[in-house]
Amino acid sequence: MATILVKNIKKMVGLGAPAAPLRGNDLSRVDSIENAYLLLEDKVIAAYGAMEELKQSPGFDEVIDASGRFLMPAWCDSHTHLVFAASREEEFVDKLKGLTYAEIAARGGGILNSARKLQAASEDELFVSAWKRLEELAKWGTGAVEIKSGYGLSPEAELKMLRVIKRLKEKSPLSIKATFLGAHTYPPGYKDDHAGYIHSIIHEMLPVIGAEKLADYIDVFCEHGFFSPEETEMICRAGMQYGLKAKIHANQLNLSGGVEVGVKLGAVSVDHLETMDQQTIELLASSDTIGTMLPTAAFFLRMPFQPARQLIDANCAVALATDFNPGSSPSGNMNLVVAMSCIQMKMLPEEAINAATINGAFAMEVHHETGSIAVGKKANFILTKEINSLAFIPYAFGNNLIHRVMINGQWVSCTNQ
View: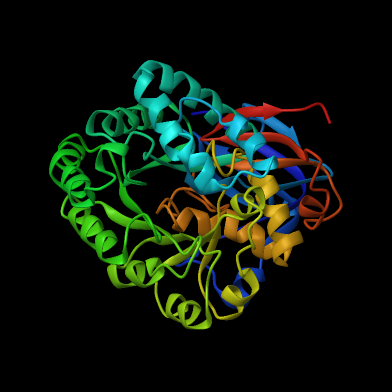
């Protein structure tokens, strides 16, 4: 059994194992120990505490001197679309030239562009490209990630995506959750036959997903022009019959009714939330559903940022995630998400870090194994470069402050600084 000791940690943060997502004032509290140690045994956290409490032993397989460095839980990114066939920077340029989303879509762009390219790619090609993205996410400090389908839009292609995610789960040291998002948009062949596509989701895709255990969650893009609240509920309830819990794309462009459906269904999370009113905020606050904010998507689309302060002050449970995808958030860097949440949404550093770690873990139900520093949890953590305070992480938003990253007891990233 391999033992690793990390000693002389300047400050270790994110301690403990809360029983529920952090809300309100609790979100701004980060339990910590100065001049600390962390002991790992067989890829899990065995003990931690102040250095003066450390019982010296000659039997450690590896000893890391973390003088001057902070140690914190690895990021938990609960909303991504990182399985895709190709980037879409040509659409990015079109937007800069003034084309609207509708105009780009009319030229064959948007989600349908990704769907065409994904349908033409093989499962192995998709796996190789997704694996490279996962490796990059790990080096940025992400230890848990949720990955959605949704660029297939046909039974064959959606199942292909989910089988890629299953392979990633089996090979990667990261904690991975899979979400079926067949209801991302309507394929061209069903443009005027919405009921027909929903029938395909319920009767062609879901039975195979259930039989092969290809997904943990079911998601629907509940938005004007996409799937209505009634359609969202129908699709989610069909998925729930196969043991899939709901996670809904809600209120990105309009007050779409997605939050209401999510709360009604007891969804694990409702994600996006750029468009919220007081009534919807109060409804979310009264529920156990987590509101996941995706600030880099709002940034990339030049949309108003999510009303983080109102959500937190109303006592909503909130998480942060990247929405990593080729169309509206082509970055999986959680460090940038945390910085942007502080700079643009006025979250305190402690609030943003909690939302991106333990609350993100709750938003994909891996809180029992990661998201905080606690005995028995996976050895998933970030060791920073030498910094003076926790606030320096979002403050120095353009700098790479990661020295080393450990995921499931394995070092995945290391710099010389």
